[in-house]
Length: 210
Image (cartoon, rainbow, N blue to C red; front, side, top):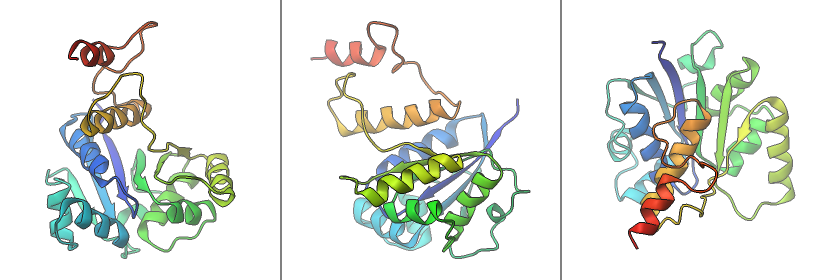
């Protein structure tokens, strides 16, 4: 079985708990051989705020539970990191959450950190780049930047939950969103959320529990 190498970036937008759930799923998945993790300076601030921990890299890694040997933490300020090169084998990159500023810099080819450079490499190599935007409401600049990255080959995958599975907790919303992203990347973990023409297994479970 060929294993995938995945790059995950966490930037300065709320919802770092969803990034933690994504990293947990990737670490458990035998189809994933390696994960490169980048957390921006503002991303570290959000992790510290949401998990009540420190902003230093060690505290951030522990908070995100990115402790598997398959995970490598990269410094976004180090522009010599391996993900700067198209020769580096990265099958997909997910920015979750993706701040509007990061979206804008990617849309205009501005590489202020290793995160934007890695995204730029994914686009030039025609590889999968998924931007989980966490912003609302959207202004015209956001919308135009979303069009620009889409035309360049990225996928904008906003952190918008579904409701037809009648979730009752934030954890259920989080887990479903992560599963949908993984399915999009060809790494499905469950069929609980798959529509069968009339219902989903998750919806049946949630409604029966009421």
